[in-house]
Image (cartoon, rainbow over all chains, first blue to last red; front, side, top):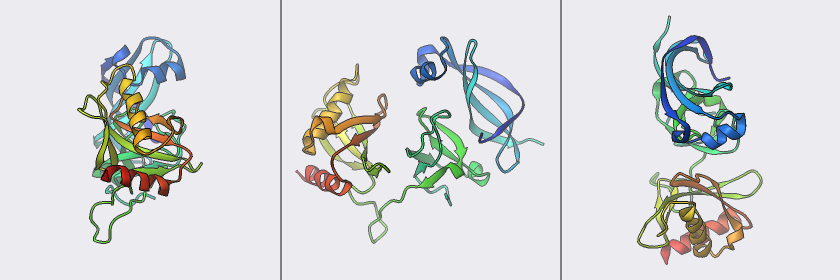
Length: 80
Length: 175
């Protein structure tokens, strides 16, 4: 894992659903699931150098599959 | 070891595709000084979007430069030799063009123009056909490795060496 999520993700928004997702075919092949959604939100992450940052996170989820491919889109500011 | 964010292309050392990185695959890097200070690179990964990934997972892709430090010579950066010996050709495809031709090298990619429209794989098929005919290869030697829905594609070429392919590309571009 390249980073660790500390706490919950807030300000969650859906940014793509179904066929609007570029990787839809890969997600279905890899994890199954039907109605995939791509989401974004703000969360605190512990980076590999142990620093804590608020970051914009993107990930995919489908009903019954859960959060997949959680990735950092950008670092926002330091979290204390 | 990545020493600066000036590297424009990097090769992934570890990855199984689970987080959109595949070992051995070459990726483009965008500048992000803040992320780099904490050991991360902004990489355009298999998802087609840029995300932060740990820099330790990449190595720089050496780029041949001319003696005066200018732009890379034609045919130098557009090829990546896989550990298996197969050659990957990085291309920038342009669909719905006025002609079918190789038109030059730009930003480390061979520009391939095709008249076909990008629908139902027509342009992809045309791109492979143009590459095969322009470089005197059999159609079976040319296949699409990545970028099915992206103008920036990676084409796998078998049965020729990188040096041979460079000569063929140079010859095709000077015609």
